[in-house]
Amino acid sequence: PIHLEEIIMGEKAVKNNPTFCEAMEKRGLTNKDWWLIEPWTAGYDEDYKDRRIYRAQVWVRLGDYDNGYAHPVEGLVAVVDLNTYEVFVEDSGPRPLSKICCNYASRFFKRDFWRKDLKPIHILQPMGPSFTISGNYVSWQKWSLRVGWNPREGLVLHQIGFFDKGKVRPVLYRASVTEMFVPYGSSDSVHRRKAVFDLGEYGVGNLVNSLKLGCDCLGHIKYFDGFLNSIDGIGHVLPNAICMHEEDVGILWKHTDWRENVVNNTGIECRRNRRLVISFMATIGNYEYGFYWYFYMDGTIQLEVKLTGIINTSGYSSPGEPRHGVLISPNVEAQHHQHHFSVRLDTCIDGMFNSVSEVNSRSEDDDKNPYGNAMVAEETLFKTELEAIRRVDLEKARYWKILNHNSFNSVGKPVAWRLVPGENCLPFAKPDSEALRRAPFIKSHLWVTPYHPLELYPAGPYPNQSYGGEGIDTWVKQNRSIIDQDLVVWYTMGVHHIVRLEDWPVMPVSTLSFKFQPCGFFDLNPTLDVPPSDNPETVCHSSL
Image (cartoon, rainbow, N blue to C red):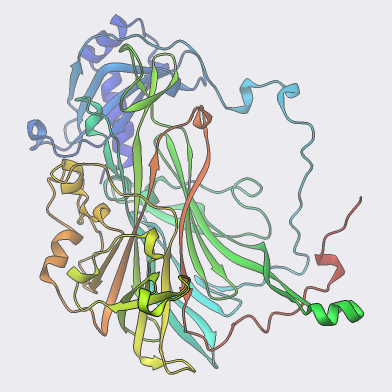
């Protein structure tokens, strides 16, 4: 991967390169302090295949602290050799530069700009949080897990289990986001190279934010530090890399016995829901990504990715509307793109040996459906890896179950959890494109493999400047058995981003998630023992 120190040294080399400086001066841009030299990984480039490089694209500020992404310097790229810091300039000539400033930072606004009707919300836990911590071991509301960290994946969760029937029953041995791929959809000879593996090429843990109370996290917070190393191997502590706290999330369950309620105004049973949140935030160039693992009282696990920051911009001077993007300002285009995330779940549902099935729903056959309303859910067990390469299907309300054939619930069925998709997309890149050759995992939403210690990253261990042909698409060709095996379930979820004007100059958070839920793992609703919320200090007060 490319290290942050190399990015900084590369920027210095570009700014000191005479050819590059001459190209900027030719455009009337002479203040080096305002030049933004952004490192983009190069993908596979035949011209530089024997060099370790990145391709620097260029933006410029028009004043101190100005949002430089409003002023892309089109037609100029600097290729940086990261071993020698040689710079190779590709200059196709000056293009119109947008002079319209569009800023978002608070320093640009006067006090009378801010909303006056936003009242404070205080999150108070006077008795402290409900979680307990010992080192990196966490327990909360029958959940137990260990919090881990590495520079490539950032937050990693280990040994996730749920206390039930007098013991901790295992659910996941390891869970993490293990790769992220962001392909852009322009056919331009420069911008077509924008296709980034943010974990495999940079390391999301290397670019993590130190979190701040009141901004990134609210409530009674526990922080965990991250650990990084510099390019010379010296270790460093990153304070407050991971945030953990509880959140109230509305109603857990409720029912009113209307017969009893009509007679004596009783019979109402309601429980409040809360979740444990374990999260971190990383800044990767122009974008921010927040990764939030949620643990709910009913046994549900949810991963939510929050996307914000600043959209990537390019210069646009052709007549008419851009075909592969959206104009967000005169001479400024935001190109169509996608964000694909690969989530690796090393499962251990009530034990190491698991299987995976698919559940599809459909209308009942006509001869068994005289009123036209009947529906059936059909379950298919996957036997081998190739059978388990699957996509989301809304028409069939498809989900996937991870089962243990050696553990049974009260109705005699194998205990299971189910993976329920949320928002998702598929790539629009052609099957023979470089993007799909290098990131084959984005072609499908589900992959299942037997555990192998070297099969950790779906695009291969070293995707930077790779030609392709490594990773999960190659592993599954072995077509190994996945019945009653130590399994890894890989889920790919993606955002298809056609930029809105409302995404500029800084993007409101967009979210993407999936859920991992017990499905016959418990014999009853596991939250029956949650007490009623009858403490007057925990309920709302109306002033109306």
